[in-house]
Image 1 (cartoon, rainbow over the protein chains, first blue to last red):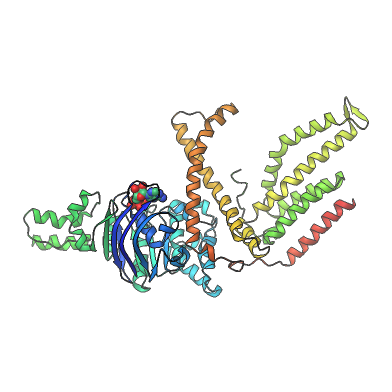
Image 2 (cartoon, rainbow over the protein chains, first blue to last red):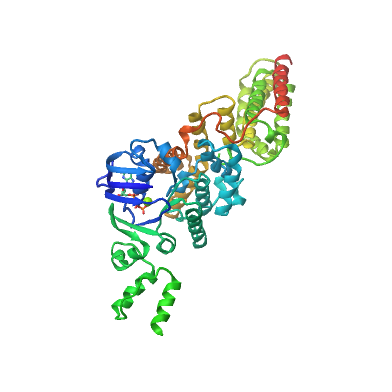
Length: 279
Length: 248
Ligand SMILES: Nc1ncnc2c1ncn2[C@@H]1O[C@H](COP(=O)(O)OP(=O)(O)OP(=O)(O)O)[C@@H](O)[C@H]1O
Ligand SMILES: [Mg+2]
């Protein structure tokens, strides 16, 4: 679905390349989590997938990004965005309209979704994100978290093949964050969307994502299935990525001489493991 | 200023009019005010303004605009009264003609200001922009510029408030009575604010582009803005207002 080959990108006026020699392959139906310290290049990578880099954010671009067999350099941003729906990190600037309903309609209208389908898609997206009651509110009257949900809903309504979200839970409380991830999981499993989500809350990523990519200083530090990446929890802490405590548990136990343990990615697994040990 | 563009929700006759009709009606009232030289007709127009406010459920707003115009009105009135030398004196250097002229000027000012503000209060800017694109075929680029700039006003104010609060906490006295001093304090804050809003506008442009900005045509709107019976009635009223202004 997405194939990136030796991508290096440097913003005009930026000192160092924001991305260096990135190669990755995302299968259709994948659920990828991207994590990394501040300034690692996560947002830049998202922009490269959505075509904003290099179409809007200019700079030196080497390598290639192919999305749904479209080369992002040769195709227009508009065409790429029919496939990739992006939720930006800065919600404030993502929202175009002044009323929730208009915001939801905007993309649907532009992409020429048939009139008969619009209402159904709109209510579906609002319901999925749990903000049906906000439909007629003005954006100015919403809280940061509510605005974030509107931004997510407006992209869900477009039903793109690839959902790309840049820190979509930044303004959300823990409950709403989980809800958003469950929603992503449902879109991924039930509708087969490819989901790529940049997220700082590693607990959520390790629970919901199938694969993790760790970025550091513009490079892929490591990537692979969630468990495999979490086995390197100690190393990751070193570059400033906090790992869930359940993940470092196995490592600590091993160091304490309890033998080889599989990595746990949630509390239930950790409980089973510890019970097993105590027996 | 902050709530000048704030939409007041409702379902009144005025709300249900086509956005373009509302603007036309407002413009016609203003025009009638400038054309007419009949004090009674001007008073009637003022009354009409207030009735519209009442009908649209924004009477409070109309009153507050009136109050806002009070100072300027008094100033204009005194100026006119003192400078008009024609007519018969009624008191000291004040003449009857001066009084009349002053009253008309003030009435015109008020009549010109109220309708547009009221109509904007009962019209969603996005509806207005959509109608301009769909009915008058205004290029969408301009409509987008109009809506985004208006949409950013409350946010701009919010940010300004935040910065001022932060500065106040550090001992900057924004509540000074000295106007010049206040301008001196606020002006430097405008630079970072301007930079952040330019950056934000740029980001919004990208957000619009990835949601098909370039594909939008005059037919894209989901909501349609046909002219209905109410609009027809409003057109007739418009014509009558102008005719009245010319004839009376
Ligand atoms: N528009 C831009 N122009 C120039 N340089 C930029 C621009 N945007 C980002 N950069 C630079 O590129 C590098 C990577 O930034 P990026 O925003 O991709 O990081 P990030 O991983 O998303 O960080 P965060 O977690 O803070 O969102 C940083 O050094 C940043 O200064
Ligand atoms: Mg970022």
